[in-house]
Amino acid sequence: MRITVLAENTSCRADIGPEHGLSLFIETGDKKLLFDFGQTGLFAENARALGVDLSSVDLAFLSHGHYDHGGGLGEFLGINPKAPVYLSRYAFGGHYNALDKYIGLDGALEGCSRLCFCDGVTPVAPGITLYGGKSPAPLGTLGSRGMKLKTENGLCPDPFDHEQYLVIKEGGKRFLFSGCSHRGAWEICRYFSPDYFIGGFHFSKTDPQTKEGRALLTAEGEKLSREDTVYYTCHCTGQAQFEFLKGKLGERLFYLSAGMTVSI
Image (cartoon, rainbow, N blue to C red):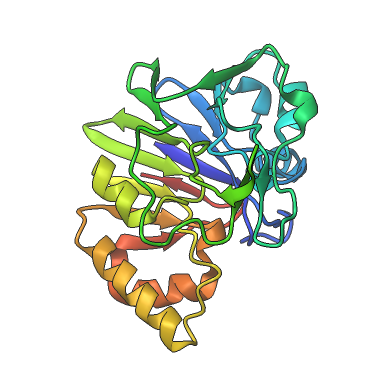
C-alpha cells in the first residue's frame, strides 16, 4: 500500500502548502482512494505538485463531518466526475466546537447524487469496509472534549456518530484509517486490532508541559503501546504531543506531513 499526504498541518516540502486539515491519497493493489478532502482546495493544488491525478480516484471517503476534513469536498466533486463519496448519514449534522462556532460541512452539497450515505458496517469493495454510526468503539475516556452537536434540545456533547473508520485488508494485513479518532485512538485500536493505524490521535489540546497533560499522554501512550499496531499519525495529534508519545512508542510511531509518500 502506498499513501501520499495531500493535506496536513505541516509540510515536508517548500512547494507543498500546509493547512489545518487532512487528505490522504491511498493506492492499494487495484484501487485508488481518497480519504478526506482537507479544509480548502489546497489538497488539489498539492496533488498537482505531487503528480497525483485526482480524476483517477475510484472511491472517496469522508471520515467525519468537520470542515477541516470535508471543506474541499466540492473541489473534489468538480475535479473527479465518477468516484462515489462515502460519508456518514450524520455527516451534515450541526457540528460545533467548544466556542459554539459552527465547524461542519457546506450544506449546499448534501443533495449531491454522488454522495453515498452510510451507517453501521458498509462493505465498499473486496477488502475495503467502512465502519460508522453507533456500531464502532464506544466514546472513550477523553469524552467529547468540548465539541457539540445541535439537537432539538440545543447544543449537546457530540457522541461522534458521524465518525467513520476505513479498514483495508491487503497482503494479510489490516490497515485502519481514522481522521481524528474522537472516540479515542486506543479504544478504536482495541476494537479493530489493526496491524497499521493511520490518522490523528486528537491530542493537540493536551499540553505535555502541564502535569495533567503529561499524565494523560503517558496513560494513553502506555495503552497504545500494548496493542500490536504500528502508528502513522498526523493532524490533530500535535507535534509536541507526537514527540512525547514517541518516547513511549519508539519505532512504532511515525508522523505524516503534507508532501510525504510512504509505502507500507
